[in-house]
Amino acid sequence: MRSFLLFPLLLLGTSVSAAEPATLRFAWPEGLKAQVEVHIQGEREAGGRTQRHDARATFTLSTQLQGEELQVKREAFSGWKGTLPAKMGSPADRLVDRIPLVRVSRQGEFLGIEGAAEAREAFASEVKLKSLDPLSRRVFDMTTTDEALRAIALDFWNMSVGAWPRLGLTPGTSRELRSPTSVPQLGGGTLDMVATFRWVGPSACTPDEKEPRCVELVLESSPDREQAKKLLQQALTAQSGKGPVTEALETSQEVRAVVEPATLLPHRLTLRRSTQMRMRTPQGKSESGREQTERSYVFHYASPAVP
Image 1: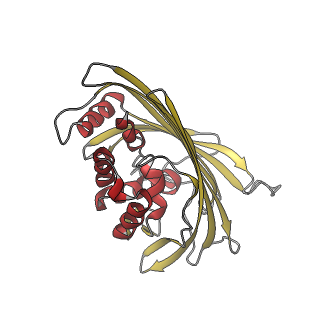
Image 2: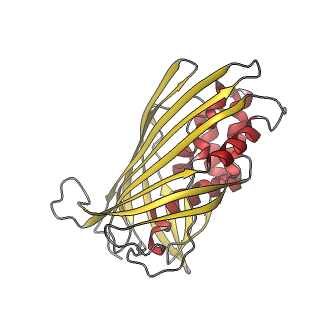
Image 3: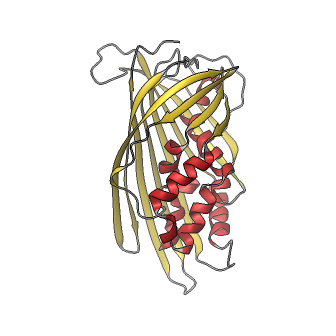
């Protein structure tokens, strides 16, 4: 059922604004440069069919100071090698690394993005925009507005880097937060996200290192079920007022990051998402589907990463 294209739009990051003493510190240096390997894989079951995807790409990550802002740049994106999700499947997974510049403060607070038009154009070429069916085109339009791209970048930054310094975590501790998150990627509105942040413990930065210079951080999050169902239903019927009815929806996400605690520079990052839903067609037929995806990153630094 084509409405399952909307699966990946419902799992977002969480905003954190509490100003508490930090034990994890943001200190990305100017002039940082890393070669990043990204791997997306997963499968989707819907309508009795299973679709799998498995693709890899590389890009260069670098930083530059501009006044009191740190600009985080993504350049030299290689393009995907392998099998991508069909049509507009997993749009956020494929869009976030097409955004060429993210602006953050010296303290790691997200400020904005640049290059939305560039990201939109690259993604349009990737999905062959003119060949998309009407629903896929609607998903493209929702997920590639300037506001939606900013939200995608904000969510990824907060989950992987930005939220952690303000949580007051210490090794072996956790914190649960519930916060409203805007979802322009789904046509507008707000979802309440429940998120649990955990500082697991020490970890080697790379598989070859024997000393645990890094730490492992884990974030588990999920949206309010009823709110998510309502927003999905609104997106499905936004244009015609008719469409399938969302009967059940469950979705959750886990982020695992291996970072240097004194700087929050990442060495490994994995995002896993699981979604199950049941829809009733206008003809009264009930159909179920599920999706599991994983996006992982490995960072290779050109020189010792020190602030």
